[in-house]
View 1: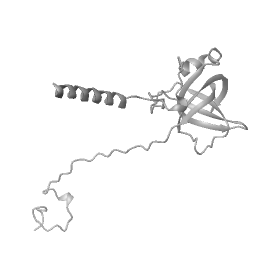
View 2 (view 1 turned 90 degrees about the vertical axis):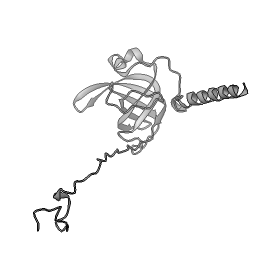
View 3 (view 1 turned 180 degrees about the horizontal axis):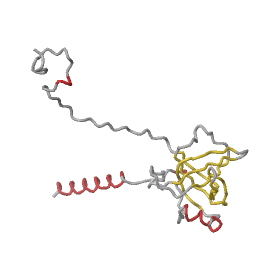
Length: 185
């Protein structure tokens, strides 16, 4: 009876350990309970209706502009994972501007870096992407995370190596065996 009781306890502990190891957490700077986060393409259609609303959005930095007292990041939206990190995908709902107080170094906050922001929708801003006029929702950022760069692993495919000893192309001409080069005597 005692052995069965110990096995049950070990199974319960194992299941609890597995469940807690699968838990997902959002990093502290951007871990804020936000009731409902509207999608970017919905906000872009009428920014004035969403002014003052809190959002957590993320994506890839497309441009950085340092002003006198703030830095404005142009961010290409990407859907967020359960950890609030932008997912590597071609899906996007557009672009938005993130206004952050202070100076951000353009070398560190470079184009292509992933970032997640939490802030308040402030206003709409019209700017040009080349010759196309684009409406950006501007977010006043309270907190953000610049995600560390992940080195992409290159996967190599190794074809199974085999050779036919009777096929002459794989061997140098000075190979001594006449069986490999039947035309020589």
